[in-house]
Length: 115
Length: 278
Image (cartoon, rainbow over all chains, first blue to last red; front, side, top):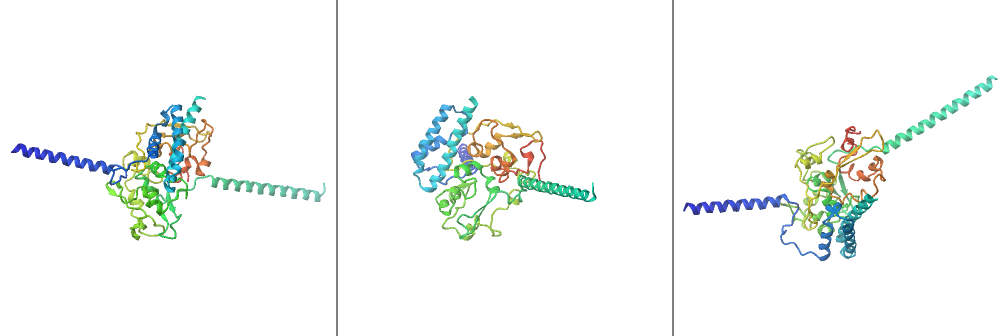
């Protein structure tokens, strides 16, 4: 009898801790969609954009060849972004410009270093 | 020499002296004027610092929007708004409208009534269902008592510097935790490796060198907000980051003097320099 009660208490406590943990993780993060788990499927260009521009933090660690390749991928994205509706195009063209610009900047810096 | 010619000579000298004094006066005035132009202006009250009035389309309808940088920078990094959301750093360059907000861009990227911040839904910007009171939270120019947050009260517990909130100290001490991610817009990135800090030697012996911290700056800005648009690529030593260009809003002046601490706070950059230039 005691064992069953004890087990039930343990399970309740664990469930409570789990729930509190989940809530605090959500509260600590940035703005999240209320349907965060059901993220809509991303278009191909956006997947490529995310992949190319997710590496800006590491730009300094890339070789000249890798940077040149990232710049080429940015250039390939441009015509696809240009086809988007006006607002989306403006936001993503600006982001692409900044992302590509950084890779070109780092590439230039690396070339200047070698001179 | 006759008396007449002596008098004539004295008058000539007097005229020359007068001309010299006048020329000196003009030069002095010119110098004062140019010094006035090239001294950083005294910043406004801290509550007004970084205030942006958005009146592209809204003056005729619900009135102009008042955007306070101090409120949003306590919650978000500069990078997330100026790169991921796409707010331009120059006035009237973003093209914000009620329609773009409703489509989930600009203010609507976060203010969509669905996204949560600290567990609470963020009110929707320019929603069709909004009442006057809700519109006034942003469209508040010239309206009294409509804003939800007041600077003094909101920043009461934040560490202060010589001028206003010391945002760097606030972030370091954990009083604020600026978020660098907006779901649906931001790209997940690996944590940034800290970049090397460096000292920038000043061009003049009487100017204290600048202790530039890449680490402090990259927390707020990432890499792509500054490079290459504000600080372009150039071989070392070929760009001169003069105070003149900063005051004109270029280089450091793109943020300092507008939102980041004012250029009057000399010691903020030049270690050992006077704390404040009036």
